[in-house]
Amino acid sequence: MNSAVSTPTRLKTSAMIASIAAEGQRTVAAPFGHALAALAESRPQIVGLSADLAKYTDLHIFARQHPLRFFQMGMAEQILMGAAAGLAHEGFIPFATTYAVFATRRAYDFMHQAIAEEGLPVKIVAALPGLTTGYGPSHQAAEDLALMRAMPGMTVIDPCDAHEITQAVPAIAAHDGPVYMRLLRGQVPCVLDEYGYTFELGKAKMLRDGRDVLIVSTGLMTMRALEVAEQLRGDSVDVAVLHVPTLKPLDEAAIVQACAREGRLVVVAENHTVIGGLGEAVAGVLMRHRVMPAGFHLAGLPDEFLAAGALPTLHDRYGISREVLARRIQGWLG
Image (cartoon, rainbow, N blue to C red; front, top):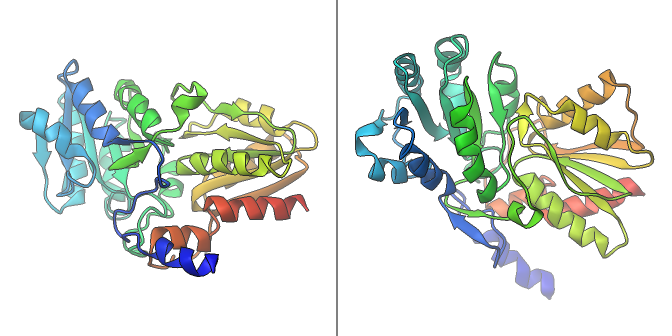
């Protein structure tokens, strides 16, 4: 009876801009848009550009407060990146927003040649990262981190929540070089402030310690990791969570120190394909430093084109929901 009641509830979520917040979870509206608009008050070099998606990347808030510093480029992502590069050459700090699939797949060469090779301070802020929409492969950027990590000179960030996005905006604006940052938009959960967390570019942070399992996570999967840790505590499983918001440059020292603890299972959790993301990056770090944890598992998206559908159902299907991730970890513990 219970399962029959719960299934329709999970299926009614909108496929396109579905919320990742749990029912009753504390959220903040449009943290990126508000943070950028506030920062621009004291940083006249900041400009905003979008490829016909300002409303869906929360950049419309910046546009409303700074209309003369906002540029609507239309549905032309290559032109978006080229224009951002030109503005950066003239001394501006452009924030270019679009969906992650369009930035990384459609405009990759423009980012590579016009922005990254020139070392320009363009900040590419990309919505719908990983599996945060149910519209299928055309809109699911499951491989964006792998593509951006491979680009020389590109700093890559995957923030967890509204608290981190608000702090990351001034940090990436101050960074002298190009940045790719995944974006959670709309009503974004807020959890990291409860852990006294402060974002630092290039730094991983241990949010909680535990003797049995270490979850190394990034982006929204840190939120899930913290939920899993609380759930497994009821089963007497002690879970640590290391949050890695910056995938490039990677905080190798923090990862080695956390993973070297004897007898602890290591699970890398990410909202990204298991190919070329945080999991393989962590595996490479451990191999280079000759660290051998008690066990090592990847909890990411499979190497396949993902299905379309309701977001909670897809998260269950691909193993990144709280309930399924907790079961997977229990299985790996034996």
